Figure 1 (cartoon, rainbow, N blue to C red):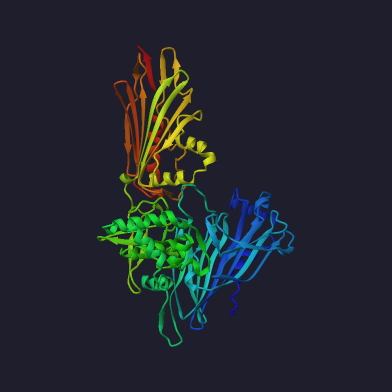
Figure 2: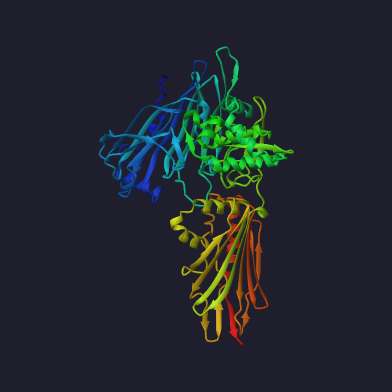
Length: 638
C-alpha cells in the first residue's frame, strides 16, 4: 500500500491555531459572528497511481473544528464519517485538543448502517463518536484514510458546509501517466484558487477556498449541488505498461461502456411466469400503446418500490423474473421488469439512466456515473419516446414524473449504441388546479361548499396523498387540505371521486366559518380573499443568492362565489387588477352576476427554478399583490 503524502502545508496552516488564545478566539468570533463553531481545516487528499495496470486511488480526509461558544458543546460534540464497499477505511483517528494543549483521544467508535428512511438496505456504514471535553477553544480533529475501490466513482468535493471554514482544500497527487480532468460547479467558484504543479513523477492539483461562509438552508431551495461550490475530478485516461493511452471516462462513449457492463448479463433468459402475465395483459390489445399501458399499470400496482444500495447492487439490476417473484424492487429492478415485459409484449423498450432534478449535471457536460442517480425504462411508439418510471404508482402513462423533467436520459439501444435524450417539461396547461368555493352568509358567519379539480402533477400528487393517508387522522388531514378564511374553519363533510389514478381528480367539502363576515347595523363587510397566498414568500434580495426551486409549471385558479342574501345589495365591489412582469404575475377579477358576486384569482408559473437575477421581479409582483388582500366587499340592506 502506497503511503499518502502528508498534509504538511495544510497542517502547517492549521497548527498555527493549535493553541488558540483568547485573542485568536475573539478574532474568529468577529470574523464569523453568530457561529458556534468554525472548521479550521476541511481537506481531502487523493493519491492516484497505477497498480496492476489500472488506476488505483487512496485518500485521506482531515477535519479540524474549533468550538467558539458553550452552546456548541450541547450539540456539536458528536461527529461521524461514512464508508462502504467502494470506499473502504484503512485507518482512522479522532481526538480533542484542549485549550491547555492536552490531547484526548476518542476510544469509543460505533459503526452502523447509514440508512436513509426510504432505503430498505444500504451498504454504506456510518461510524459515530463523541469528541471528549468539548469547550470554547477546544479543537476536535478527525483523520481518516481510505482506499477507493472503484476510481470511476470519485465523489465531488464540497468546499462549504453547515459551519464556516478557515481553510477548505482538495489536493490530488496524480501519477504522470494518468490524465485528470476537473470541473468547478456551483456558485462563487471564483473564490476557489486552483494550482497545478509537477513534482518528481507526479502532477499536483490543489483547489483551495479560504474563509468559506457556512451554507444557508432554505426550504424552497434546490439541492446543494445546484449552488454550493464544489469540484468534480475524474480520470480521463491513462497510459498502460506498453505506453498505450487507455480511455477511462473521457466522453459519453466511455461512460456508456461502463454503464452497459452493469446490464449486459441481465434478463438473458425468458421467465415463463412473466411471459404468462404479459400474454394475459395484452390479449385484447391491437396497438402498441394499449400493450404498453397495460404492462405499465400492472407493474405500478403489483411491484412495490423498495430502495437498495448494496455495493454493486446499487448499479446492477436484478433479473425481471426474480423481481416478479419477489413483487418488489428498487428503481433498477423496476426498469428491468418493465423493459423485459414490454419486450415480451413486442414493444421495444430500453434501460435508461437518468439523474433527478436534485442534480445539476448532464451527460453532455460531465459524462460520469454521478450524473445519474436513477434508472427508468423508455419506449418508442410511432417515433415518440415515452419515459416510464415504475417507482411511482400514481404516475400517468405518457407523462414523466416531475423529478426527472428537463433532465438528460441515456438510453441503452445495444452493446455499442446509445441515445441521449432530454425529458420534456409539461406545460402550464397540463397542470391546472381550480378551487371553487360557494359561500352563503349565516347568522354566525359564513358556510360554504368547495370543489377542487386537479389535472397533471396536481392530480398525481393528490392521488398519492389519498393513497398514503393515515385513516385514523384523515379528518384532520382533509381539514388541512380544505382550510380557508381563518383558523376557525370547521370541516363538515368531504368526499372525493374514486377510481384508478389518472391525470385528473376532484375532491369536495362542506364547511362553516364562524365570525368571518362582519355585520354592522344593516351592512355586511366581507373579505373574499379566503387565501392570502405568498404572504411569507418574499425573497430576501439581494442577501439571498441561492435559487428557488419549483416542482413543475402550473396554473392555479381560485374562484369564490358569494350568494347575495335576499333584501341586500352590493354597495362596494373591489376593482379588478392584473400585474405581470418577466418573472410571473397574477389576475384578480371581481364581477357581479345577478345575485352572485364572483372573485377569481389566477396565478401561473413557467419556471422550474428562479435565479438571483429574477428575485427582484418576483418581489415586485408581491408588492402589487399584497395590498389587494385588504379589499373588502360591502353589502347593504335595501
